[in-house]
Each structure stands twice: as C-alpha cells, then as structure tokens.
Image 1 (cartoon, each protein chain N blue to C red):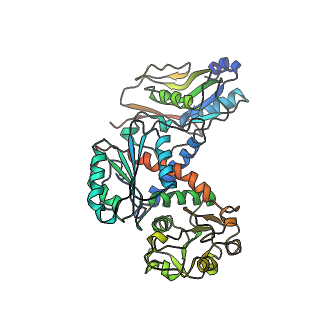
Image 2 (spheres, rainbow over the protein chains, first blue to last red; image 1 turned 90 degrees about the vertical axis):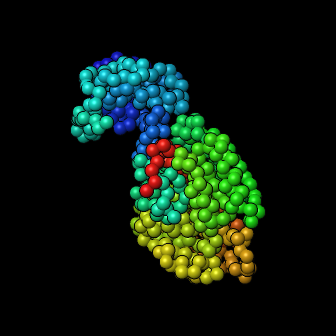
Image 3 (cartoon, rainbow over the protein chains, first blue to last red; image 1 turned 45 degrees about the horizontal axis):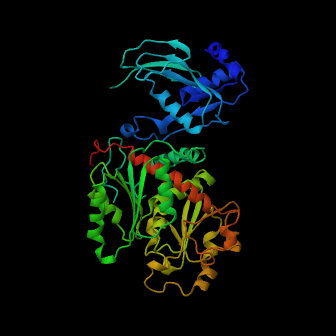
Length: 152
Length: 324
C-alpha cells in the first residue's frame, strides 16, 4: 500500500484519514513514507446518508484539515471499503472545505458489497465476505483486523 | 415534567423542554456534539447537510435577539429551512390561540418548533399536543426554564474550566424571575459541581431556594469568596409587579459586579451573563468588557450547542417513537 501511495507522492499530496480506522492507517502511511505534508482527518458524521434513521452519534470527532485544500492533490484514506457510502460522504465534506485538484482513494481492506460506483486507487488487501459478516480494524496499537457476524 | 416525554428507539426524548431530569451522561453527549459543531463555524463554508429538507419554525411570543438569532443560525448551518414568527399576544387569549397557531403551522409540515412564551409551561403544552414526528424545543417559558441557555452556559464553563467536580459557581441577582438560573442550577447540580451559590437580596430569591441544592447568600462579598465562575443575571423589571428593590443605584452598590468585588473570587474566575446586560445596574462595564469576561464566547457557543440539540432531536426517527 505504501508503494502504491509512494507513486502518487510526487505531486505533494495531502493525506486525509477518515475517522477512526482510516486515521490510524493514514498515520502509519504518513510515518512510513516520511512525508512532510501535514496529515488531515475527516469525521463524516455530519454528512452521513442514514442520519434520519440512526440519528447523530454523540462522539463525533473533529474534522481537521490543516491547510487549504484549494488546488491540492488529496489522498483519501480509509480502513475498509464496503458500500462506498462513507466515501460519498467524505467527498461531499471535502468539497465543503474547498476545491481540490484531485482526490485519490487508498483503502487498507477492500471487501465486496458496493452500493455506489466507488473504486479505490490503492488497495492493501481484498477480501470476500458474506453479506452478514462485518470486518473492522481495531487499534490503534497494535492494529488488528476483526471479522464479526453482524446482527441484522 | 420530563418523565412522560415520549422517547425514540435510541432512548432519546422527542422534545427538549427542561434541563431538569437530564442525566450527566446526556448533558455530556450534547456538549461533546456541540464541541464538534464549533469547528463547522470556523470553516469557509459554515454549513453541514444534516437537516436538509427539514422545516424549523421559531415561534417567539416574547422579545429576543440572541436566542432567536442563534437558533436561526444554528438551523441554517444544519441546512434546515427556518421560518421566524414573532407574535405578541394578550395574556388572556394565550391558551387557545397558541394551540391554534401551532395547529396551522403544523399543517404546513413543520418538523420542529422552537418556542419562547411568557407563560411557564407553554412549550410543554405544545409538546403534548404535536404528533410523534414533530419536535419541540423550549427557548424560554415564563419563569420556568430556558434549557438551551442552561446548556450553553455549561458548555462555556467546560471550555474554560474543564472538570466540573471542583468548581464553585455563584449565580448573582434576580434569581426569582430567572428561568435561566433554574436551568443552570439543575444542570450544575447534575454535573456534580462542588458548590452552587445564589447571591441576591431575599426579595429576589425564590422561597426555599435551598431545596434546589444551592447555598443562598445575601452578602455579595461573602458569596463571591473563592468562586470559579460568576454568573450575573439581568434584573427583570418587566416581570416584577411590585417594587422588589429600593432603587437601581442602591442595587448596584450592593449587588453590582465591580472589579473590586470580582477580586474576591478566584483569580482565574470567569464572568458570565446570559444577556441582555444592564451595564451599571447588575454589572460594571469594565468587568463586562474585561479580561475575565466570557460573555461574548457564550453567544458563539450558543450556536454550537443549539446545533447539537436540534441535530439530536431531528435525527431521531418519528415513526419509531414509543411512549414510556
């Protein structure tokens, strides 16, 4: 994954991790690649499409984008790509901050079950899971992967 | 008054009417959510799409600048559509015309009412009357409660002081007529502050005020000794139907917050006031504008706290509501 991102780093991209797992992955990549651009974080709670069904989560983290995104190349980083809805929300939020030059998507774990036309540019691993199975990154120290039966 | 408010499937109440009966956990959650909305106000585009397509009616039967404006900004930053209605009604017609007004506005598919009314219990009355998908927020009812002000004050205290458990808080002035003081006292005692003091002449204290869990002082110098937070209240002449204070000058000389009096509080103490302020009556200008004043941050914080309360209510699904 670091190699994949290294290829993109010529354009001085800004790494932006999506809370919470995506931030952990972004922090590791940022360190591994020795980037000197600051690290951004995004909490997409205010942009979720299921807000009217599940309501607001009380522990929303703060989105922190350290520099102006205008004209910047952004690499958006998440732990798991599943339905694609989180990425849709993240893109909307980013565009409420500014107009970046480009956005690429890097994901540690890609699974099946896409509900939106979202594809990653950089992938850690690809796994195949049954619809009722739920995969989750645990962390931050150490990072681990947990697969659970999702209660329907 | 809180026990019979319908709750949704997440255990959240359908309405926000008073701070009385809220748990410390619930207050903490609202303040945490407000904290994340603070950052939205600092962005280039100060708007998130949470309440897109929702209609909020600000129904104000009493004068207001700060509360109405900050509710309007809060709703707009959440992308809701806001309608402001300011009405004065004669005291005798209120019951009937209030419900009729609400019935009409409800027919326009309003999702949430923010209500201020000079009669205690007005928001509660409307809350009993609306269907389960409509939410009611109390923006001040008579002398009873002003819960969003109470929580924005808790938010302000938490931002300056952090932990509540070691704090001594003094509420000074017209406690008798103050719905703000009542909402603050309930919230402060729930959050477990070390001490809540009320400081006022006996004529401006409710009878048996100590039963609320506060210590009453009539001597301001003694009352302010070592406190971490000083909350000044406005003298509410419009609610006084007899002379409760001898004169404005005498009141200021005994209960006005001056620099000299403030020096008796903790050196790091902050000064708050819910507004509107009567400079030279309950607070001296150099204190109101001084380095210890948190009065303008209170206003800014009011937007984030009201956003948190609106988002919390409107996010709960009405169709799944159940009454307990």
